[in-house]
Every structure is written in structure tokens, then in C-alpha cells.
Amino acid sequence: MPHDTSLIGTIVAGLGVAFLMGALAHRLKISPIAGYLLAGVMVGPFTPGFVADTGLALQLAEIGVILLMFGVGLHFSLKDLLSVRKIAVPGAILQIAVATALGMMLGLWLGWSVEGSIVFGLALSVASTVVLLRALQARDMVETEKGRIAVGWLIVEDLVMVLALVLLPAMFGSRGDEGGSAGLLQSTAIVLLKVVGFGAFMFVVARRVLPWVLHWVAHSGSRELFRLAVLAIALGVAFGAAVIFDVSFALGAFFAGMILGETQLSRRAAEETLPLRDAFAVLFFVSVGMLFDPKVLIEQPGPVLATVAIIVVGKSVAAFALVRAFGHKLQTALTISVSLAQIGEFSFILAGLGVGLKVLPETGRDLILAGSLLSILFNPILFSLAVKRLRAEEADEAAVVAADEEIVPACNAGVVLIGYGRVGSHIGSLICGRGEGLTVIEDQKDMATAAREAGATVIVGDATKESILRQAGLDEAATLLIAIPEGVEAGAIVRRARAINPKLVIVARAHSDEEVTDLVRRGADHVVMAERETASRMAERAMLTLA
Image 1 (cartoon, rainbow, N blue to C red):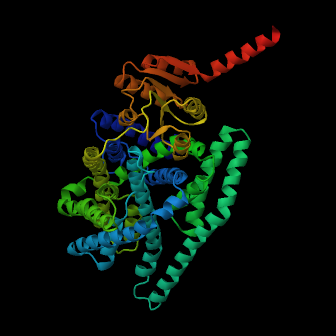
Image 2 (cartoon, rainbow, N blue to C red; image 1 turned 90 degrees about the horizontal axis):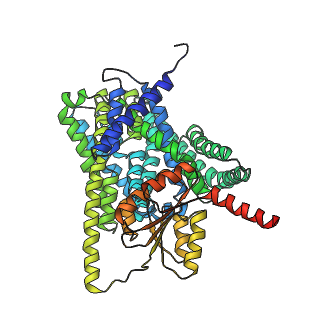
């Protein structure tokens, strides 16, 4: 070829094979994550055939982590973060201590040095940002109490790992140096100063500048420029945080999102970054698979099982016990413990640092990678089991309440409205203003609050899921109004709604003739196309003027 195409080849191979294996996993009714991981193994250096560039794949995956954490920050306010500090801070630190101790014992049992065993234990103690958030988002838990605690816990883990990444070279890179202790204290002071400086910069300077920039761009009227501004802020703040303040990309992106989340443009910013977040998150899982050498499963089955047990069982039990000790419900403890039962990106960085400092043997890195892949593979299964357990607990609680008192539904609405944005809020105001019952399905917290204030019963969740539609009472409703602008999601909702209630009258919104045809084919009774309705009204006005 006339020029280097390794980046293009890596993206094409990663996304192409991930699509095939993800589709196969979906067909087999297992998590697509398993397919993405297997795709990484297939295009990695340890299997025959095409080999993608591992270094490039890891950098592309890092972009996915940045965009994902930015998106979470958009929906996670400072108030939410501070509200869980009493459990997230001590809980995360104690859980890291327990997991590190377990990993250290395994390392010593395998004959490694104390230093290498400590690094190994630290690598097993921190959960993957991408895996945890994808699991919570898939089940609409990010904005629940359980989700806020899990995300807060994750932020504390990230901060501890940032500190560890700076202190480990000072501790193990200066062995035999007389000034080692002084150097360690100096490094610790510098790290703490940088973290405090980063926080001060974000909440004093960036908190004023970033929203102003975004509002200025929004008023320009250019959607392309707005999208570019959002991406520039997310990636720029993350990169600057890592280069200037030595904190992680993920942490910088999270704080950037949290600051912009306080503005009225947060929903639009989240929508603009969603497609890229999904694509790069897939590349993250592919990159994990590329690092995995399947031979380690055959050559060291015992240590691999022990490593996975520490991650999946040891960490989970520790987190479960800690959450329960702080007085939280069984459901909260179970959700958080399962969320943390995996490892990811920080573990790879720590493993690479340990090998580079010549304190962690390469065998340790192989075990960390094997533990990461297997724990990520098992995590969706564990989450599914946990969700079933939670539903059983909730059903039992509901039965007890029902035995004591008669439960009256908050709203026996005959109309269900999906989406409470610009169009949905007008519809909701008209229906609720006439005293009619209305149930709204909305996945954005601010929109859900507005709908609730208008007098509607609100279900917070993803309307494409059958469970959410049934929770809204769609099987007994008379009319379904779909006010979201996304045609693909609307089509999926129409199909599921028609299957739930064949007699339901479905009115949907579309933006093109193709969307109208698709929605009608899937079962919509009436489809309103904004452009067509606008043209009709404008033409009517013109005719009245000419008459």
C-alpha cells in the first residue's frame, strides 16, 4: 500500500469482527460483550490470521472510556456524588485493601516478591469503568441510589489508582536509595497537590468557562459546531487532566460531564456523543480480547482460577459486607457487589507499570489479563442472576405490603406518552391540563421531574424494553403516543407495544417518508411527520391570506 493504514485496519477489523461475534452472541441470547471479547481474541496477536495493532486498539479504547465517563458525568451531579460519600469513600478504600491483601497472598504463594504481589493485588482491586457503567445503563440503574453509590465507589477507586500509579515508581523504582523515603513523601505531596489543583480548576474556572462556551455554540445554530464543541470539551478536558494534573482520562472526562450536566444543554450534549460512545466502548472490549493469550488457561489453570475467584468472589463478598455494614438494603449491597466483580483498564496500566519496574513477573500480567477477560465475560451472567434475585425480593416486599393495606395505583392512565422533550412536554401539558390521566416513560432525570411536576405518573427507564412498557401499564392502556425523535427506537417500541396490546391505538412521530413507512409497517395506527404538518399549516395560512 502507498501509505500506512494500520489505524484504518485496526478500526475495520475491530468493529467488523465485533459486529459478527456480537450478532452471534445476541442470537444465542448471551451478552454481546462476550462476542466483542471473542472478536478481540480473534484479531489479536495470539491467534492465527489477521493481527490488528494492539497499541492503536488500546488508544482507541481509551477514547471510549473518556466518552463514556463524560456521558455519565452529564447525568451525575455534584450533589449526587457528595450524597454517597459516606459509603463510597470508606467502602471503596476498605474493599481495595481486602482485594489487595488477597492478591498479595496469591502472589506470595506463587513465589513472587512482596513488591510484585502488592502490585498484583492492587490490579485485582479496581473495577472496569466501561463494564460497570454499561451494566448499570443497560438496566437503567445509573440514576438510582444503587447506581449513584456504584459510580461514586468507582470514582474513589480511580482516585486511589491515580495515587498508586504515581507512588509505585517512587516506592519501587528507588529501592536501595537513601533518599527513598524522602522521595516517597515528596511524590505523595505532589500527587495530592495536583489532585486538589485539578478539583479547584474544574469547580472554579471550568465551571464558569465550559457552560459559557457550550451556550455560545448552541446559539450559533450550527448542530455540527455544537457536536464538535461537545467532543472537544470531553476529550480536551480529559487529556489536559492527564497531562497537566496527572489524573486519569476517565476522571477528567467525568468532571467535565458533571459540570456541563448542570446546564440546560446536558440532554443535547448526551445525545450528540452517544453514537461515538457506543462505537468506542465496543473497541474497548475488543482491545481487552486482543491482550489475552489463551495458552495461559492451559499452562496455569490453578492460578487463573484463583485470580478469577479473588475478582468475582473475594471482591464481591467484601463489597457486599461493607455495604450491609453501612446499613443499606440487601438489594443495594447485591447490586454494588456484582457491579465490582470484574477488572479492566486500570488493571492493565498497573500490570504494565509493575512489569516495567521489574517487580511483577510477566506471568502476573498474563494472570491479570486472563482474570479481566473471564470476569468481564462472567459479569453479565452474574448481573442477570442478581436482577432475578432483586425482582424476587421486591415481589416478596410487595406481597407483604399488599397483605397489610390496599394499594391504590397513583394513576390509572389510559394514555401512555413516551418522551417528555420539546414535543412530549407540550402533549403532556395539554392532557394533564384537562385533568386526564397520563403515564410518561422518560429516561432523562430532568425531563422525568418536569413530567412529574405537570401531574403525570412517570416511569424512568428505556422505553425500548418490554419490561418498562409493561410497567407503564401498556397492556391495559387505550392509546400510546411516541414523541421521541429517534426513528429506529420508535420502530422497536411500536413493534413491542403492538405485541403487548393488539388493540392499542399507536400514534408516532416521524421525520421522513421512510420513517413513516417503517412505523406503519411495524404497527403504528397514525404517524405524524413534523415537516408535513408544518407545511400543511403554513399552506392553510397562506390560502386564508389570499382569500
